[in-house]
Length: 342
Image 1 (tube, rainbow, N blue to C red):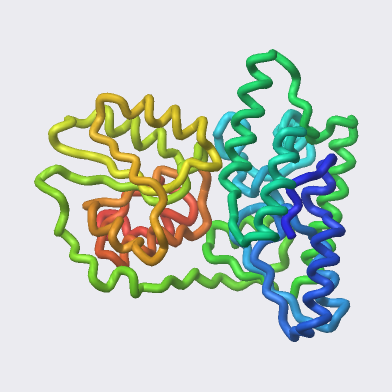
Image 2: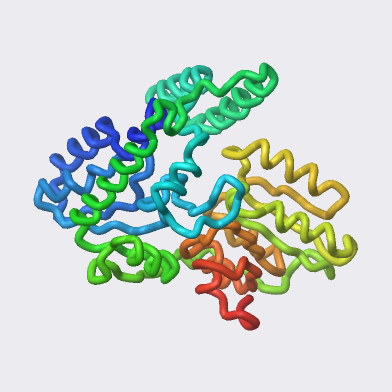
């Protein structure tokens, strides 16, 4: 269960439907340990349910979501890095942020859910098309957004206080927090997670897809840069394309592997920005063939605007023998030996 249809900010972190689904599975399996990967759009009460049932709880901190309700990325609406959570700053950041869908999107979601239950076919990309279409129609009509917005009832300050209380309660219920990077670990300790409860544990990867990748077996004499990941504003793909525009076209190219289904407007902007450059949008890559993508590039570029945690794509690039150029911040900088591996 993942709640995508809600009418208040509170419902983005407390979800009775998700709690009920978890309780049913918990009662059937009776686990001794519950490992929580993420609770965004689920419910912060899930660790409480596990502890009440006698299980120990481990939670991996994949981003900053416990302390940053705007998708856990510590990014301001302007795209600048947020220095850290505070009631006043979070209120300003979320004031005009939409957390739910309009009527057309809700109708599409209901249709997709029914289709998946009846046929097993997942048509989720249509959700993102509906979101883009809805936003376009609203702009055409110059009408205000109809979807629920944080603080629409004037109670955002109290909702943020409520969320802070839920985070503190969750921290008490979790036995061990795992952080894949020192970047996340240092900040969450500063923000209230007790140091004795925290362990830094790097992600592992499956290296088999990269066993037959031959470094240097590229297309031609041109330097081939590559981006592998979600095509989204916070990933900074526009920064990479803009940088490529400043380089001689006859000396380098860019291959972009990934989907822009979640951010199709951004994808269209990137294609316009890429005009006149040697840029190829290669589409999503099947996980079983991820090694083929790295076999085509000389250097992976990761220009993320947010701090990132411990990007798996960097470890995959190293497994393929491909050096990495990345933003010198956060979990990206931790993984790269500057001047040697990237």
